[in-house]
Image 1 (cartoon, rainbow, N blue to C red):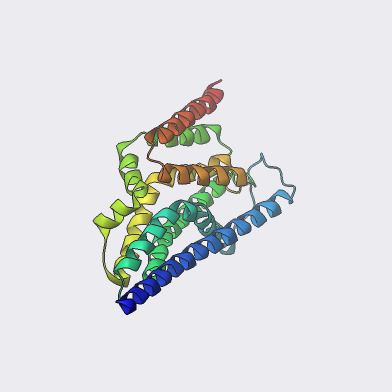
Image 2: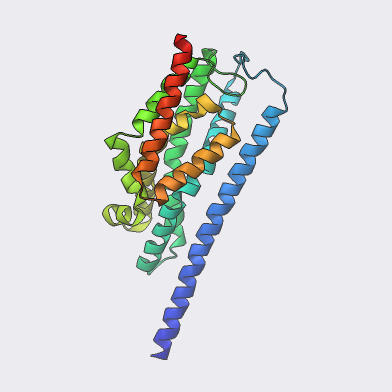
Length: 263
């Protein structure tokens, strides 16, 4: 009996240690990503460029690749905090089910799958930014120069906050345990697939909000921090009106911008 108790205590300590390692790892990645983005933003601010005129500089393949890296790190900085409740819940459930291997391996595969989806999104965002740049629709600070396009994006993002599709995706993100119970798959491959699915549901919630970076500034740290906090609040609170009010605010903002174009 004593041996069984000691073994149970040992397993419990190992389980808590694994979760601490996962949380610490997520925190380190997030801090690094934010430090990189802040460094990039400070460098851009110090260049003294005209922030209202279109950027007409030539971009080579190296510039586009650098932009892709920037978007990838930015997605990690913004989305990992919002995904942490889901990841920690996966680590907890997987730690209780795993008997033959360390639960750390599947947990990091889950994170890898989640980030892989946002990396693919970063690629699309990079191509979008490249297209806007070639069309002379972006300033040096990566802000859309067209009020018509900017207002339309604000309006679309606001309306999207009210759609059933977004509500369905958000319901998965708001209920990590429910997601894991319905989507659970055993093994390392299963962890990777679940991470991919979690990332897809997350993109379903947030892709238009991320596009607003082109309206408010891709390197706008205040916007990034506010949006990160908003997405985290949405996922840890079961309150649809938070999304609804944000959507209404974006619609009003977008209409105001478009009204300025008409005048």
